[in-house]
Amino acid sequence: FTPFSIIDRVAGRTSGWLVATDVGQHQMWVAQEYPITTARSFITSGGLGTMGFGMGAAIGASIAEKRPVVLFTGDGSFGMDLIELATAVTNNIPLLVVVLNNSSLGMVKQSQEIIYKRTSQSKLSRKTDFVKLAEAFGARGFRAASDDELSSALNQAVKLIGRKKPTPCVIECVIDPDEKVSL
Image 1 (tube, rainbow, N blue to C red):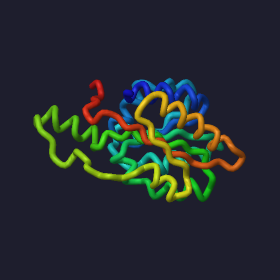
Image 2 (cartoon, rainbow, N blue to C red):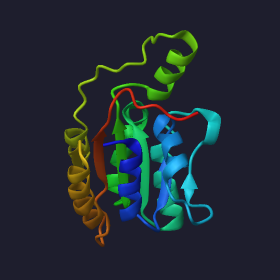
Image 3 (cartoon, one colour):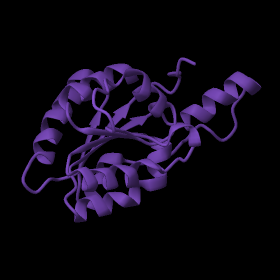
Image 4 (cartoon, rainbow, N blue to C red):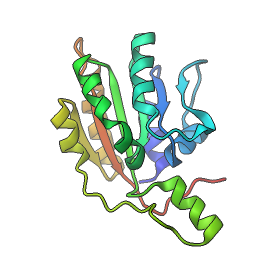
């Protein structure tokens, strides 16, 4: 269960949707792997390093384009903007949030390992239950640690998001904390 397998599986179910990213390793993996085929359909902050950018950008893009959005985020970035899930729920935004949870600030950790050969304050020992958190906001939450679990979660989420009155969904994908971005 790798970041690329997750991205490929999500891409296979969200064709024609807008794609947004927060900032971190997940942003790099999506830029490297997601098959973007339509102009102006990939919303990212680029190299600006603005963790917390993704949720607001995804909601705004969905409202502006009147289309569903898949937001790829990490557990660190999602922690910075998850309050906006309340906005998505209140406004019935057709939004799928895919949290690549590596229990760290992955890009920061990877950079520290390369430059300093050690890490500091980039490993997260949070016990956040993203499924319960999503449901506390009125969204639907799912957890996936395998391709089969992700397929099941995607099937349910796509149905909920595709309804006349969409329900935003969050899928937490548990990945290896030692996954790296190819630089």
